[in-house]
Image 1 (tube, rainbow, N blue to C red):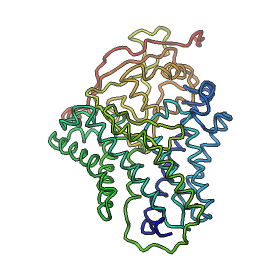
Image 2: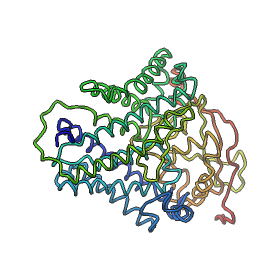
Image 3: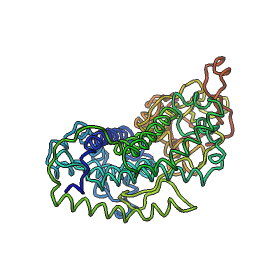
Image 4: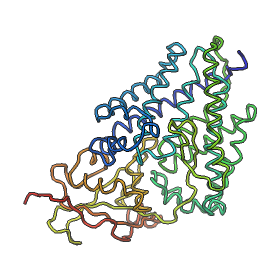
Length: 473
C-alpha cells in the first residue's frame, strides 16, 4: 500500500515521537510535583469538589471513577514511567498494535488530569499536547512506514497553531498592525526569562522587524507546509528558528517546544529509509476512520479561526481532539504584580514586620533576575500574572492560597521560591499589595543591580487571618 505510507519520513517520525515523549514526561512531572497544593484533597481547587458538580460527559477521565491523592500520584508517576519508556523507544520493540496502545496510555492519563485541572490547566498548550498526543498513537512504529494521512494531520495542527495565532494578532491589538507590540511585550509577558530584560532593550527599529517577521512566519509561511519538498522543510525550519527565538525571550511552558516538535514532523531528512512491511489492513482501516473523524471535528475550530470574533485556546470537544489556538491577541502596556506578605505581629499595622513571599518564576524582589523554567510549567506563578490583571481571575483560588499560607501548608510552600515563615510557625496575618513593575534602564541596572523597579499602586487584599485562629504568645 504505497499510497498509504511515506517511507521517506521514517526519521522525521522517530525524532517527532522521541521529542513528544520528552514533553509528555515534563508534563507528568509537573503534575506530580504540584498537584497536591493545586487540586489535591486539601488543594486550592480540590478534584473531589469539581467531579461532584461536573458530569462525566463534560470532563471524561479516570478521576470521575475514583479520586485520592495517592491514586492521582500513581497515575502521574505512571505517566512519567510510560513517557520515559517511549523516550527510550520501547514502542519500537513491540508489535504495531501494542506500540499504539503504549502511546494511548499517556494520552488517557493526561486527558484525565487536564479534565479535572480546572483553571490550573486552562492553557492552550494542554489541549495542544493532547491533540498531538492522540495523533501520535496512529503514527505507527518501525514495523510500518509513517501513514501519509497522519503526517498531513500533524501539518494541519501546526498550520492552525501558527495561522490562528497570526490572525488573532491582526484582529486584536492595534500594536500588532502598527508593529509596536514588542515595545511592551518583553516587559509585560506572563513570565520573563533571563534574557527578557535584554530583549526589551533592543533598538525599537529591530522590534519592528521582529513583529513584521512574526507576521510573515505566522500568516504566510504556514501555507507552505503543504507545498512539495524541499519547500515544506524550509517552511518548517523557519518556524523552528522563530520558536527558538521565543524560547530565548521568555518562559512559555512547552508551547514553543511542542510547536518545534510539530515542525520536525514536516522535515524530510535526506536518509535512506529502512525496509518495512506493508501496513496491515486493520491498521489502514483504523487510521483512515480516525482521520475522517478528526477532519469532521475540525469544522468548529476552522469556523472559529476564520471568524471576526475569533477566540483563542478553546477546545470544542471534551476529549480535546481538535482545538483552536492563539496567543497574545492583546498586549499589556503596564506590568502589575501582586506581592503577598505575612507578619507574625499581633497587630497588622502598616509599620509591622511584613515579610514577602518569593515566587519561583514571577517577578518579586526587584534584584532577583528571572530564571529559565520552560518547558517546565509553574502553574501558580502563571495564575498570579492573571490575578494582577484582574481580581476576578483569582476569585476561585486566591482566598484558598492565603488560607494555606496562614496554615503553613507544606505543599503550598513547596511551590514558592522562599517562604519567610517556616511551616511550623506560620504568620498571624497575610496581606496582598499591587505594584507596578518596569524594567530598569542600563544606567539603573549598573547603579542598583536591580532588573526591576516597582511602585506601590494599591491594596489588593487587606490583612487577613484565620477565623478563630489561636497563636502562641
